Image (cartoon, rainbow, N blue to C red; front, side):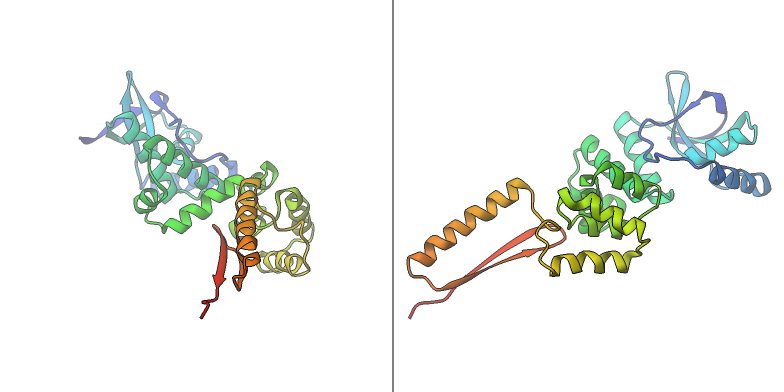
Amino acid sequence: MKEIRTIELAKIRPNKNQPRLDFYDESIKNLARSIKESGLVQPLVVREVDGSYELIAGERRLRALKYLGYTKIEAIINNQDDKTSANMALVENLQREDLSAIEEAIAIQKIMKDGHYTQSEVADLLGYKQSTIANKLRLLRLDDKIKEAIAKNEISERQARALLKVDENKRLEVFKTIKERHYNVAKTEEYIKALEDKGDKKVRGFSASVQLGINTIKQAYDMCRNSGLDGDYHIRDGEDDVKVIIRFRKQR
């Protein structure tokens, strides 16, 4: 049951499931000025835990209120179990806060792990397409330096997704190039596509397990060809998968 209650800010502790990694001082100061001028339009949401309160939603607002010197504030009390509270905190932040793509991906991964959700279920929960969830999670495969650049908005999510097409041994070099040349999304995609078109085998690649699967299929195809079957073989590398297409012509 929800209720509104006046509580002391000192008794509110952060939510351990907070997805935001960075809180920028200037952003908090701007929010504080807005609260000072217009009041707190959207209240904090907390739950009672061991005589204190755990924040469910409103981390930036809480920081702004402390910056302004508030000691008490009206908050919505929403007592839920640990799992429900964790999911509420993550979902509310994902839907309302200006998170980086990496923060979103980490939060989505945590929702899936803690709630035992599939990508499709999380997509329904957040109002996304399943492919959107898959694309965001793929960002977590990137090198730490690239993930840090995404978190700091030095490169966009689309640029990061383009970098996923680059072989991991070549990825940091390509990343460094697009940063030094200040490439936008279009130029980044064009640059990576040009490398692929030039046949730079070091640019695009597959993981060892995927490559093993491709090699096994190719060996089976070659055996069929050697036995006299007429056909062709193609590989299509998509955003989320690798398609091996084999076609045999009917013998009449």
